[in-house]
Length: 335
Image (tube, rainbow, N blue to C red; front, top):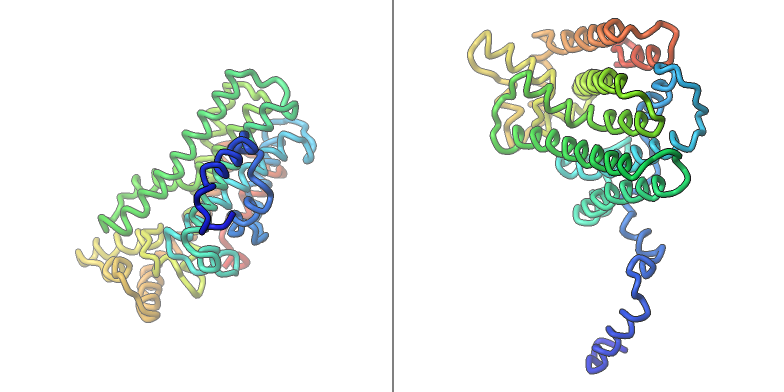
């Protein structure tokens, strides 16, 4: 039937609904392939989360093979959740590149990329439910499954709250966040993904509850230092996109507060909060930060935080988690 012959439309709809009573079975591979194009570009990230997941096994003294089904399920879920959220983040930040390629929304448009990002999050949860309902993970009671889904829902909400706060400061209030507010924001936005990974690990491997609080706190610390380091590296690059995007990143906050202490006004704030910026604006902000030694202080702080985490959690020297944390230190090779 073509669109000109509408008299038979009721029959066509009736036949279609009868033949495709199960909606899920009516969705074919081509449908899914087309709507997931923004996720299909293939480049993966740095692999930090996978390495951290494996290092947790050693930290807890558990002998687990790297190809353990439970580890694969967690890694796959975190990858899909992370990559899906990046599609949305790039739109929200008006980013231009991701992993040295044009952002997905530039190639596929905002609408499809946004839809793909939200679909990817729900798809990840759906696949995790399927794995929990299969024989892939032994010993999960109905109550435990419910608890896991509640944890995931809570942490995904935290991710959105953290991202939302950063956007609100940047686009709506233009208020300079207090340091405690900044830490709270990155604890939700960045540490959240690590907490999801760790909390799934704890549940899937039946780790005693008394160890949970320490592991979650460790993930919070690592996420916080990771984001402060990432903020530093962004302004150490030629593009310094955080300035263009108007973010109140860690070195920007250091610089603004330093200026306010000295003169009660801030040139950095005036530039960062401008709607339109020029290359000379970026150079000016970086020049001020350099003269203040705010970037240097940021570098020192990251390295001190790494040392503090290693000491506070008594991480032994020749262990995977100690090695991984030492890689977060900023040195000449990092810059």
